[in-house]
Image (cartoon, rainbow, N blue to C red; front, side, top):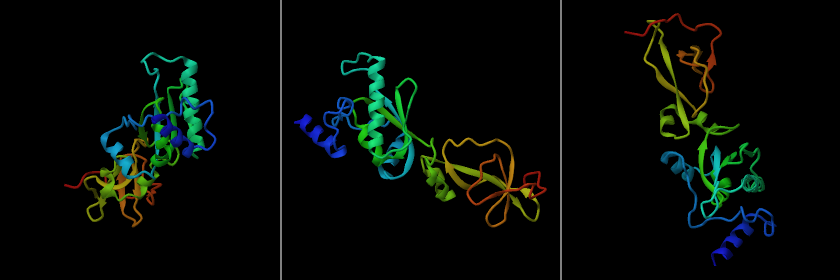
Length: 222
């Protein structure tokens, strides 16, 4: 009965898959289900924001059902089949780790979820790697950024216009978590024209880096 249900499930997902060389790799494990190895916050957020684009790192099982290590060729087969299935789901730019132990994709949880149930998939994590991953962070309000598991706050020290001193750093924007920022101090102006000093080159959308310091402020306001 379980095999029949699995066959019907795969037939619905992929017309023409039956009899494919990847049938063994495309066997879903309904009893186990998905294994999210990320933080509880990210795992939960994927469920509630299934159509949000993020990066996925899908780790493959390197052992067989008996717990014995599979051969290099078998592991390559698993990686190739998982990547092929993702492509059939309309996921572009899928890549495979050089050692065939993982498959990487930037897509939505809803689109990739069927592949995450395969018996050959050990677990998965989500990230902000890849073009377009976590791009929605830029549109999240600065005050709500910290609550999003896939975003990180952008802080800056505003300049007190009368005293021309630096106020305490404040959250002024939001960006994808893990974005690499150059640690160079950067002067920039907000869309409203207010001068701020950033601890890095990462700026919120709509802010403009100043070619020269937009203020002579050097010290913190007392």
